[in-house]
Length: 349
Image 1 (tube, rainbow, N blue to C red):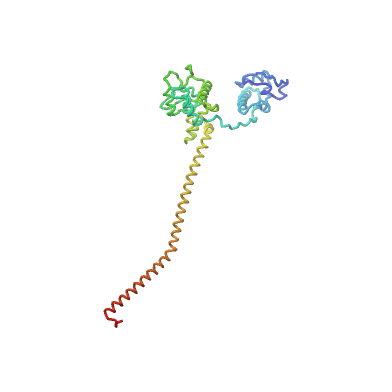
Image 2 (cartoon, rainbow, N blue to C red):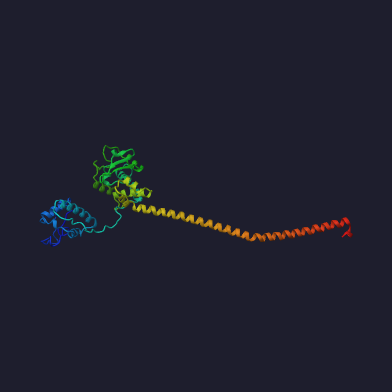
């Protein structure tokens, strides 16, 4: 990164004796090591690095973006740590310097399933482009690790490697889609699955550029990158109920916070769907309980009605029975009288 004196190193008047025109840009040095920055101050600024204060650091990073500020502060902290050991500065001037807030943009865009299927439709099995997608999506590894993968990493149905960034060992199950893509490739003696058109292994940046061309051919939006497939793979596992620890083991992340940065949206969606299922189940239970309650109320009402009407019915039945009994008794009595009259004659009456 080339720095300009009037912007990146604009210290106050006590440190800068000679004014510099606003249009003048001096290519100082590529800041690839803290010693380069220290050398500038010691040689060009006459050994005044020891006078660097927090306010000067704040002015140095004031025109940088949030991420650039953090990169510059890493450089300055390494520089001041070395300078303190060498006795060139008494205190760390980076302490207490506030950095611009980084807006949460969601990071790399996650590939939707529709775009993954569109890419697969454009790049058939047996092509380098298809194998690249399946490696990125199926292993959830960074591009720097994907370009190193080869058949020598296949052990017992899994890909075993150490991540280049962290050195952490990772054992990745080979999914059917990835296995099919590997088997469809022509047998070769290369140590890596993916090679350039000249048969050489890809560099990380070279792979990104080539994969971008493959995405363009498949009609994939420009915002979707190779790293977005790593995020899509983690999202897929989260949506299928995998825990953060399981996803961390698959993708080779070192901390849960890194995993949660990738899976936050997927977990939020899954939890929302679970809440919807619980709400639907609860509604059904409530409706069933309400229905059962209604039936119970109807039964109770019927029971009350029966209790209320049975005495009346009993009375009516009793009256009818009494009337029937009385009528039958009268007829029996009259029949008895007739039989008696016939037997004894009319004078007997």
